[in-house]
Structure formats: C-alpha cells, structure tokens
Length: 263
Image 1: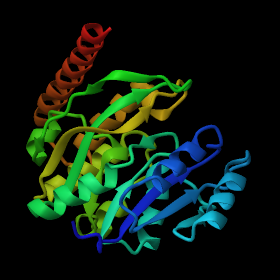
Image 2: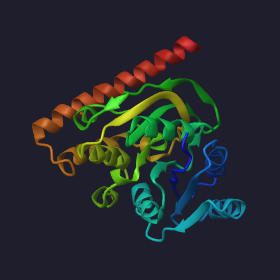
Image 3: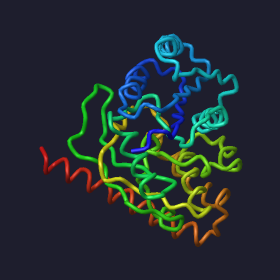
C-alpha cells in the first residue's frame, strides 16, 4: 500500500499519567510508520508531562503542545489539528490503546476505496487492563440522517481526510460532553459518509470518572446539539433523539449477549 500519506494523530491530555504511556506505546508499535503524534496537554500537574517529554526525546515524531487555555478535549483536538501537517487526521484518547495494524488497515481502507471518513469496531478494556472478549457493534455505513438516530463511532477509532475538518467544525467546542459525536455529525452534514470497518482495532478504556460516564450531562448535550448546532426543530429533534436512545440500548444489549455467549 502507499505509505506516503502522513497521518497526524491528535491526543488531548490532562493529568493522564496512569495510562498515557500505554497509549503512546500503541502508536510507536504501529506497522504504519508515517505519522506524527501531537499531544496537546492542558498543563498537567501529575507526571503526565514528564512521561510525554521522555517519549518526545525517544522519537522525533512525538510532539508536546502546551495548551494553557484548556477548555476540554475538543478544544485540545482543535489546537492539535491546527498545528498538524498530515494528509489524514486520526484521534486517540490518552487512556485508549491501538492495535498494531490499526493505522495500516484504515489508511489502506480509505485510499483503496476513495473514502474520506472511517472508523472501526472496538473492545473494552478496564482500568485493570482486562479486555472484553466481545466487540461493540457498529453500523458499517452512516450518512448524516442515519447517524442522527444512531451511535457507535468511537473517537479513538476515527481517521478522516484533512479536508473533512473545516474551520467551522474545528472551531466548534466548549461543552465538554459528546463533542466528538457533534463533529462526526457536522462532517456528515457536509455530505461525507462514515464507513465502519468490522474489525476490532482499538481497546476503549472504561474509566469510572470519565466524561462519558456522566450519563445525564451527556444526554443534555445531545439534545442541545440537536436543537442548537444542528438546528433541528423540536419534533424532529425528539424523533431522532428517541431513535438514538433505542440504538444505544440495543447495541449495549447485543454486547452483553455476546459476552454471555463467549463466557
């Protein structure tokens, strides 16, 4: 495959010293080598910065960006994107892990099919490092209207062509919850289809105090995004919101049933 495409990997961090070393190692272990890793740190006060600097000294492709005005993960991703040079942009949260063939598989998939946006299945990993036997289900093709009533795109599995991330999208941040989903919807609203790869390419870390675990606030953000950023009317927003909830519950149930079958 053509390895000439530079992939910019954007990783927000703040007080991430528990897991960030494993996340960085998973990038270093990639079979696809033409990448840069931009770690945008909100001036962490634990050992995060010390860990990052050690990796920067180890590999010139890893860069630390100080984010003095940290406003959450999406703002950090925006800073990283603006500083990046890649043809493609990939995202990795500081507590997640990529499998070694992750980038290779996705860049090959995008280039060979002429796609602009792809993501993949994932397995869950606990704080203690236990990996789920089953993968979370995905929808393999998502348009804007389809994804309004669905979910399943994990942030750390996304690779998009640079042209997908317009100035308007990159400048949309500030609510702290669910902003990655809003970005995917805004990209799709511009006519881009998101294609899923039915292989588990990442381990998604479930951390008890993570933003995604704050369910009530996340749901309020979804509704706000539908009504405000996406400008849906009340009836239309309620329609898609209800279908989205059903889809989330169905995928969680399917995941549990798969785990039971494999246990």
